[in-house]
Each structure stands twice: as structure tokens, then as C-alpha cells.
Length: 249
Ligand code: ADP
Ligand code: MG
Ligand code: MG
Image (cartoon, rainbow, N blue to C red; front, side, top):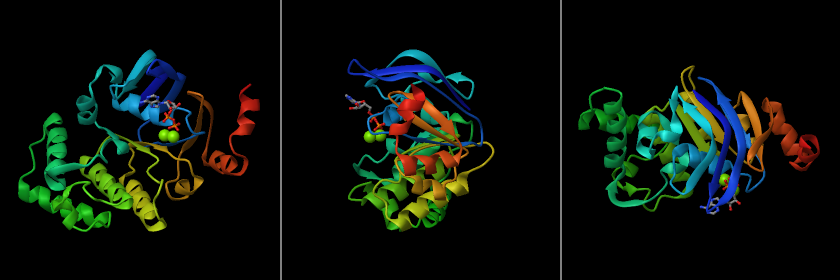
């Protein structure tokens, strides 16, 4: 699904990623944890193709293709979903219009016909129920005046509608109350399948009680410095990150 080798990337001439490697197979859930400023969000931005981030070395293959050569829209159409890509507010464009346009773009890319307005409306209503978002949110401007929790529910709704192959969630849990956290986790768990993979960036072990990962990685100073199973997240919660410096050295 995703194969990253020796990825080096900089932003404003400052090197952030320093030889990062990661392999994600279909169906796997990988959690990435690590100290503030380690480069976790930078990794997401580089994979999404954000312009400010310059790849200086290394490679990233997505579904057999050179991800780094694709532009932002191509990546999305090819099935990459980045949960922090969408919480921008777009006043004047209804959530429904925006969601339909996103879904149509992906369907067209896959050679499927666009959904009719009626079909899409039905699907959007069903999906909004799953994430416990009132249907009124479909008519409102994209994220306009949504609370933090509502934005996250909306993001998960977008993810469910787009049916991506690889979902990257960057600190989707920060600022969520327990109910919203549970809804987000239920949404992710409902989408888990042998064909779909997830990369979940989180600061807290708590999310991983709900979304149980196959692998946990520690990203520190621009690289993956330790990998393990879900027990590693518990160990990090108990011990912090300091002990890893000795281990890495
Ligand atoms: P994390 O998500 O692990 O907390 P980030 O990837 O957000 O870390 O940031 C890694 C480093 O890159 C930080 O030192 C941060 O200040 C820097 N950085 C990230 N984005 C930018 C940017 N747009 N301009 C300048 N520096 C940036
Ligand atoms: Mg940060
Ligand atoms: Mg971050």
C-alpha cells in the first residue's frame, strides 16, 4: 500500500524528516507517536503533497506508483485521505455540495458514474447518522462555525463517503470529548477492512484503546526510532520518550 524509504524533507530550508522509513500493508493500522516537533505532521503534509514541504531525498510508493510525483488532487483521487486536509472553512459552499464534488471526483477517477443528487443525499444522510452529526450540517457552509468536535465528525463523514485506500489521521483525538472520540473511533473501526490501511498520529495512548493498532512507531527527530505492537504505546505512556534516546544511541 505505502512504502517509504529514506525520506528526507525540509520546510523553509530546515530539514525536518531525516531518513524516514515506513511500510504499510493493506488492512494494517499503524499508530505514530512521538515528541512535539518530531515531524509527525510534516510526514502527513509530505504524503499529502503540500507545497511548502520539499522532499530532498528518498522515495514513497503508494499502491505501486511514485507518490511524490503526483499532485495533491491526484493523490486524493488515487485514494489517499488526510484527515487534517479538510477542516478549512469554506463559507458560501455548502457541506453537501463540497462532499458531492469530492466523491464525484474520486468516482470519476475510478471509472464509476457520478451519483445523482438523490442518491448522494440518501448516502450523505445515512452517513451523517453514523457519525451522529445532525443533518442540518449538510446544508451549512463547509465547517463554518462548526465546533471542534463537529469538525472532526464531519471529517470522519467525509472519509466514510470517499472510501479511501489509505487514511491518515493527524491528532484527530486532540480536543475531543469522550463521546466524540468514541464516534471517531467507531467510524474508523467500521471502515477497517483487508483492503484499507490507516496511519493514526496521536499523542495519547487513550485513542489506541478504541482504535487498536497493528503497529506502533515512535517518530523522533525526523525518523522512526522504534517500532512495536500496541504494548509500545502503553510503555510510552508510562515512561515518556526520554528513555528512547539512550536506546537509539
Ligand atoms: P509534530 O507534528 O511531530 O509535532 P511538525 O511536523 O508539526 O511536528 O513540526 C516539525 C518541525 O517542523 C517543527 O520544528 C516545526 O516548527 C517545523 N515546521 C513545520 N511546519 C513548518 C512551516 N510551515 N514552516 C516552518 N517550520 C515548520
Ligand atoms: Mg505538533
Ligand atoms: Mg503534529
